[in-house]
Picture 1 (tube, protein in one colour):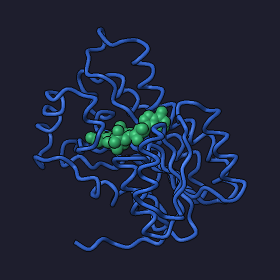
Picture 2: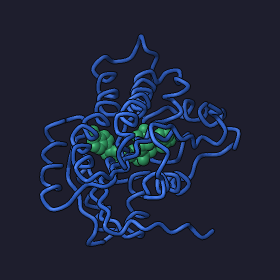
Picture 3: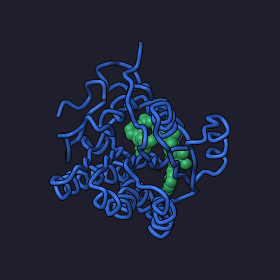
Picture 4: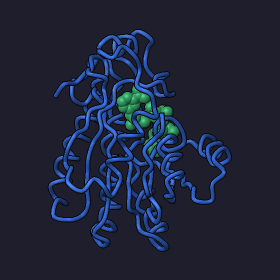
Length: 250
Ligand SMILES: NC(=O)c1ccc[n+]([C@@H]2O[C@H](COP(=O)([O-])OP(=O)(O)OC[C@H]3O[C@@H](n4cnc5c(N)ncnc54)[C@H](O)[C@@H]3O)[C@@H](O)[C@H]2O)c1
C-alpha cells in the first residue's frame, strides 16, 4: 500500500521515547517527509543504535528523562538557540508491572505516573512557550485505551494515561486561539518492547478485547500521528483519537 506523503520540510520535531517502538517509527516517517527530528530517550544504547541504523543528518538525539523537568528544560533551551520546535510527540512511557492496586509497590506506582503523566506535562510546559512565540505547533500525546477503560492490574498506567488525556483537553482549549493543535491518541496493544513489562496473560487479555482480533501495527499508528502533526490538521484540537481496532467505541 502506498503511503500518503506529508510535507514536513522546515519543521523540527521532538519525539520522546523515540529510540525504539512507536517513537522510532514516527521518527523514520518524519525524516522521510523532510523533517528535522530530535529524539529524547533515557536508553543510550538504543539511541546510539537507532542513530546508526537511520544514519540521517536530519536526526539528532539527547539523553533526557522526561520525568525530570530540569533535563527537559535545558534540552529545550539548547535546541531553541538554533531552531523552533514545531512538533512535539509525547510518546515516552512505561507500563510498570502487572499488579493489583493494593499490592502495587508504592515507589513504582509513582514512577509510572511520573513518566506517563508528568513527563507529558514537563515537555508541554517547556516547549509550548516556543510554539506560542511562533504561533505554530502540533502536539500529539500518546495515551492508551487503558486511560479510557482503566485496565485491571494496571492502575498506575491507566491513571497516567487518563491524566494525559485530561491534560490534552485542557491545554488544547488554552491554545485554541492559536495555530497550535494538541491531541491525544489511544492505541490498543502493538508488538513493541513495552509488552515485555507485562505478563503474557495480561497481554492476551488485552488482545481478546480487540474486535479486529489482532495487534495494532506500528505503521498504522504512525499514519494517524502524521496527520495530527501536519499543517493539514487545522481544526482538530483538545481531542482524543482512537486507534484500538474497535475496542473503545467512545
Ligand atoms: N505498544 C503498545 O502496546 C502500546 C499501547 C498503547 C499505548 N502505548 C504507548 O505508546 C508509547 C510508546 O510505547 P512503545 O510501545 O513504543 O514502547 P517501547 O518500550 O518500545 O518504547 C518506549 C521508549 O520510551 C523510552 N522511555 C521510557 N521512559 C522514559 C523516560 N523517563 N524519558 C525518556 N524516555 C523514556 C524507552 O527508553 C523507550 O525507548 C508509550 O507511551 C506507551 O505507553 C503503547
